[in-house]
Image (cartoon, rainbow, N blue to C red; front, top):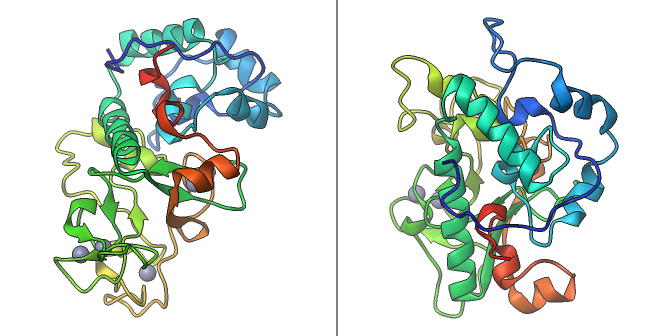
Length: 269
Ligand SMILES: [Zn+2]
Ligand SMILES: [Zn+2]
Ligand SMILES: [Zn+2]
Ligand SMILES: [Zn+2]
């Protein structure tokens, strides 16, 4: 179904503050309802506004936007999450991007375990370890994939440089509308995710902004300022940083490493 792995994370007690809409939005701009309101998920939403921190800590590993989206509106237990997904899938069909997003997270986690370098996109002012894992399927602000970027020999620089353009260092940018809360978009007739780009408030995409100065070539706006919020932390793009941590650094800070860094649904238990 949504996640290839049928692995079981630990059942999680306590509330979850995320909105059901993160996963399967009940509203779209046109006003059409995607998810029936009410039911246990609906009640959960109202009672659990305080619970997101506990929820995040309760997971053994890091939890990113796609995982949070999958547990949204539930008590976090596997049974509730699956029921939630099943219900939504029965009603609306599988959310187009969910599998893709989970695949990207899994590949990134595998890369981290292989290299010992944990690439993450983090909003330091949020309580989350990270909002996304950086890996082969991640897109840079310059428009090129992570794979087009290379580290120098000693990896002394903070971020790898792009080999396809003048981009001075990889900066994570969402590559799917779901990551910026536009869950309805992929369902639109004729929508092509390959053409979709995350936009600045100025109306131009990140590719129209200089990857070094962040200034817009289209209108001269001085710096990319996201027109959207991260579905994980609700911060703006510019509230985040792209960084790589070693396993030791992460251990030292009590952050997940190794198998615990894998996405929720593929964590064997
Ligand atoms: Zn580039
Ligand atoms: Zn780049
Ligand atoms: Zn701009
Ligand atoms: Zn975020």
